[in-house]
Length: 109
Image 1: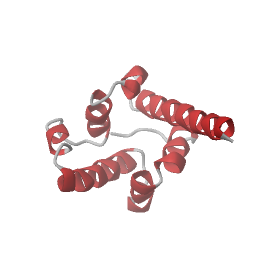
Image 2: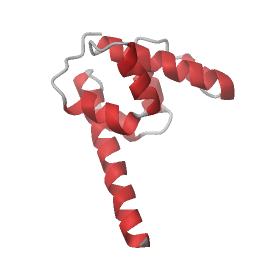
Image 3: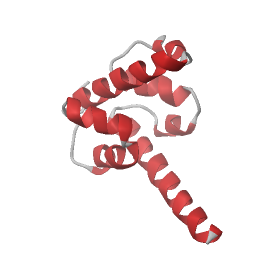
Image 4: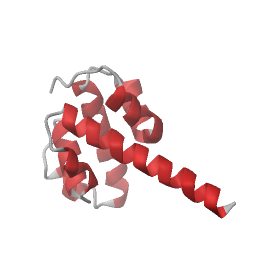
């Protein structure tokens, strides 16, 4: 049973890494930035059109939630998606980032 759970976990992890890599590449950023801690958040803020210093705000526990939602709204808007898609990016990233990555949307930021 442990082996099956581990395989499923690794498959989801690889899917998420590939999806973020592809989203970063579509936005003209280096794909490898998606696997570097903290730098990936900084680049995601840039993709969302938010200032880089918001990364510091991500360290404040309650403010982090608001900044995450605003960053995802920016990312969704720059890929031509609406606020509903941004809410999906925030609460169901396992589903919505692969849709963004492997779909036919273009980055317009």
